[in-house]
Amino acid sequence: MYTYDAEGRLIATTGMKYEYNANGERVSKDNSAGAPQTLYLHDGDGNQIAELNAALAVQHVNVYSGKHLVGTWNPATSKVYYAYADWLPEFAENRNCTVQFLNNLRANRIKNFEKNGPAKA
Image (cartoon, rainbow, N blue to C red):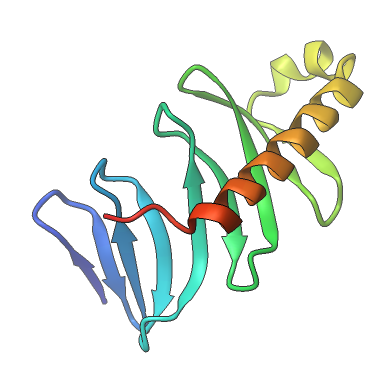
């Protein structure tokens, strides 16, 4: 069963509910008791840049060029998954730079999250 709000955003499924901030960005997925299971971090442009689990461990980091998703980094495997196969040769040459960028982004976002907590609606 799926439940949507007046803006057409998913707000509940069986056993889970979703919370959004004032900008309409999904910020958490909570279990039926209201405990956060997944937290979503966004940049200033509204792009979802990271997903954290309930223990605040990063599950993945997204990299954007403007509003276009370029790729996703999985910290568990240290692999970068590219959104467009034809971009791969260009970014593969700069893989080490991309991974360093993602590591720095992750460290800064985690510090900010630890200091300020999740965004409030």
